Image (cartoon, rainbow, N blue to C red; front, side):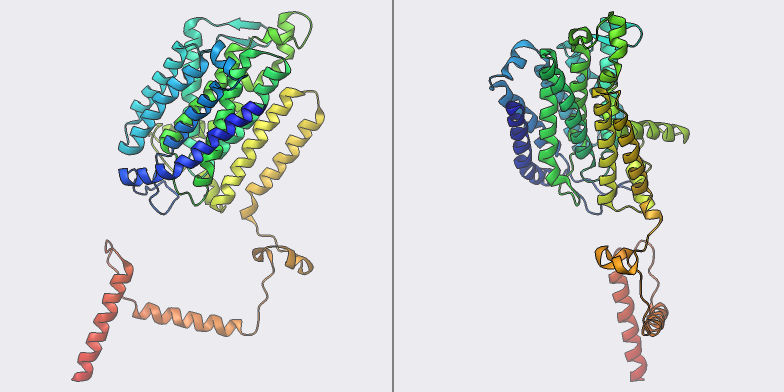
Length: 444
């Protein structure tokens, strides 16, 4: 565990320290696109944050290669090199997209090629535990297609959710934390060395997100861009593929009896492995809803819009920070709830806890729909927006004066032609014109 923590800290430190220089480089390189209709930020913000995250990934793998215990991962498995190859390719495509806005189909082709590069080097799904059937060995083509599909879906799920400051990095960090705990349990608890690469990938991914988050929290000073969102999506998919396709369920020997009964009984344990999208269920749901919504409207599935889940939270009335925290809450509930259920599926307390926290999450979602007022004795303990407003005797006079002032301003206001840049300048010109006309009339 100490070596994993050291790898995590080195990755986070390198990512954090490089993000500042990368931000300056992005400004000089002109990687600051204009604000689009679907964006929620108000000022042009540099992208290319994925550069710092990629070098953090390289630093983490380099440090792990020189540690005593983690060095065995590189000696016995080719998966870290496969991950680095695929990450380098997807990162390069993302950098080009952040700068030049390449076509969506080209990015999709690049994602498939990056997944294929990892498959060629051995990072692929070899078998799957199927309930009621047992361990099913996949053919080469089946494993390749399933691996490529899982990589592409995970990358685009993370990319779609990257719409608010700190949202994608935080949600992926939560998912990586849950996945790290699960993979470490398999590797250390059951002494299965095949789970070590996935544990390393999850630790490095946590470091990448934690190092970038201080620069990306609202108000963000830099965005990760596609170079970062596609990168962390690929690393998360690689961790899931590694532990799913390389760990033989029969090796764990959790249950006695036939292999078929064993796999059937241990399915709760393999929920995060067979369905890695359960730990990124929110991005996956957003991805599916976006595809259905755009296809229903006759648009391309890759056409951008403002219908994502985080956009809907803003429309309900949540602030930027509160919307991000709500998405964090639901991601953590799903990820750690699935993790707890996989450890002990027979415990009713886990199910009751998930139900209770889900109810709390629903209340938080609907909070802007109503503004509760605290009783008078508790007003000193709550924020001002929850206190009862006291109407004084001077308020009617103040309101009448304000209404009269607004009416006078409406009479004096000069219409501003649509398309004139700078309302203040147009108002100043109108005021100057009225002053000159007044002087001319007085001189007569």
